[in-house]
Figure (cartoon, rainbow, N blue to C red):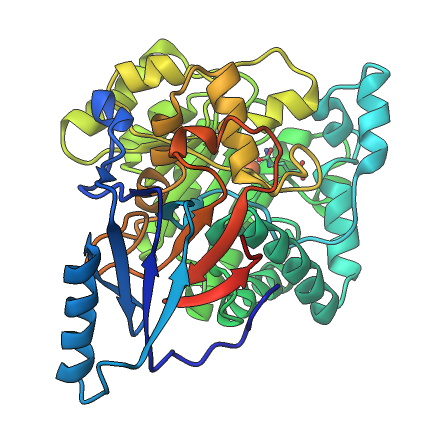
Length: 449
Ligand code: NIG
Ligand code: FE
């Protein structure tokens, strides 16, 4: 049951007690061997929350006393406390999904059959389908319809334990529609159900009208669109002030590393952070470019070059790590044999995060626990590595140091899981494991024991 979407800040405190295991992920970004260290608090640990933040994580009595003290200190009764009895659950930070294409209309169910008959993802896009068919459906959809669609899938994500979602534009491909999609993402976050972090992805594909203007010269069409992204879309997006970062689909046959570089440098000049779809299907210089630009994240990394992995590792050694965001449902859904080199990345010292890539073409997937299961089975991540990848490292990929761990002062976003240890979150594949979700210190979903 969803308790409330439009949440005024709770005046009362919250004590989360009775957990079999509290996994704090305290201590910041995880990389190398540390990615396997989840920081499990001893039994008898309570999490105390007030005014949307964590006040204490500690022995039951001490945490309750700290909350009473904080209430008194702000002129409130020390008894103004609600309780969530976790009853043997595992408590973790709320999950952070650092790569989704949340805002779109329609479905692409027909492409599954086309691929089964041998068409490739990029063949379908080159023929004017794929992303471009979602662009047509999205341009035609009303803002209300896009909001309703986004709410439906955000609610689904919340039910799988996600409390923060990155949401890209990229199904508008003209200035007005891109701005509308970012506005929708911003409004979805303002609902207060799940926090939404908007990203501008104008360079997702070249739209049909620009292709039509250069019928015999696809390279000229791409260049014309890059000029529009830099000259028209980016200034409007920066003036709108909703997007926090800029992304580019850098891939052979879509936008080259050189085009991505020009777009992302222009974004950086407008004070947007940068990230990119890097080496999703083939080595395209994406990982190298992410490292060169000091991007927040390099995403997909299905086929990075050895030099690309080394370039990412060097950023971590230099103290400004680019987070490698892996999306293992994508090659699986596309029927490709690609396996992201997760172990190689971790062993090279690259902090690894996981995301759903929720979108209608390559990953109609809302469940981060499912992604964690796939990462454990197919990519060789331990349960603890997978959990760090969807909490503290995912928060770092979004430059959100206020979440992803259970530590005093951080946002009070947490999940109670119906399993006695975090190792089982990625083990019960596809099960409904979430018992309760707390967002900003309020119990926003409670399914009971
Ligand atoms: O992350 N690769 C580009 N963008 C998405 C797919 C978008 C779509 O097919 O609609 C991705 O895979
Ligand atoms: Fe994506």
